[in-house]
Image 1 (cartoon, one colour):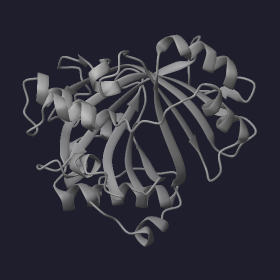
Image 2 (spheres, one colour):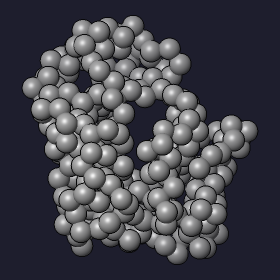
Image 3 (cartoon, one colour):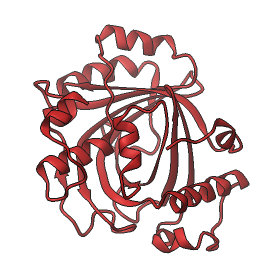
Length: 274
């Protein structure tokens, strides 16, 4: 699914950024944490030690899984639709997101929706009274609804994990996150948020690492334009090997091969070769 840069450019609530993902052994997390802390502060929304929070993402797709297949085919220009909430269901608002990719550049818009206002009806009646902090956020929400309606996208799977997050304090936008305890469940509901289903673990070497020997943690580094020097040194110091890792597609593959839902003609070989 393609979108034009001109369409995206009119939204002020956007982040043009670069993302790199790595699967690392869990034993390496404390060392990397110590490395980045001189350059970072914990995410203020995190709690505990290490600082973390729960992320639950509702992934939408078309009936023929066009978004997943765009990832599978490594389309240079593509987008995905998702809704995200934090903590336990109802503790925070829902954030409707359009995440576009142009080569290695990520452009994301998001709009905050009250938890109790979120649901299927909101997609068919986008004029339901909502309050946004800016006109551009409202436009981002209407863009999300437009794409849902034009593509026929609907709920496919929920993905949940714990995120340990740090912000670079001398850089305009720099993030380092560790995601662990990945799980998913298929869903057709806009608003269950996993309360009525069974979560399935995704922390398997075959799913995460394309057949490597360890089940690890997803390390992600994000930056605007040029990466700060300490990020470059992080990659070199720990000899990190960049790996495409899409939690949504991994859930689709795992459920297709091992689960009760059949999303496509996938085999265990697809997990290793993708």
